[in-house]
Image (tube, rainbow, N blue to C red):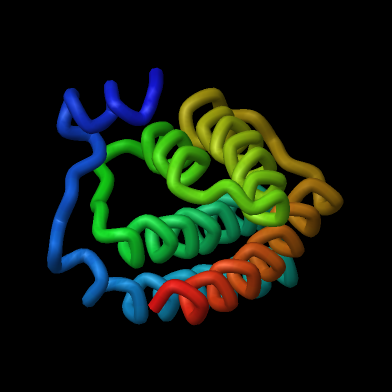
Length: 141
């Protein structure tokens, strides 16, 4: 699906109030990241991955919000961001985020188990992605 299709289907919408949601989305990303770390400590690897993915998701939403859009689809969020942001650092991160989205889907709906190393990777990604997003938001905002 392409960006225009996501808009046509109402999965991405222009919203002039979206920019007011950026800071809250970043705070939510930080809370999920904290939860992911706690789950890793207690060896709840699937929950750690889900929480770390949610951190990345809310970081990604902040990128979308700062451009004045909202989303109704995890998939279309990635599609929209790849269209709206062309910087190499962000595109690489968005490609990784999309792979993690699929992994999280398999955990949630397919019962796939996660190793400690996989959970650590997703947490590290979420940490780095949050920092990338904070820098980008400051450039745009």
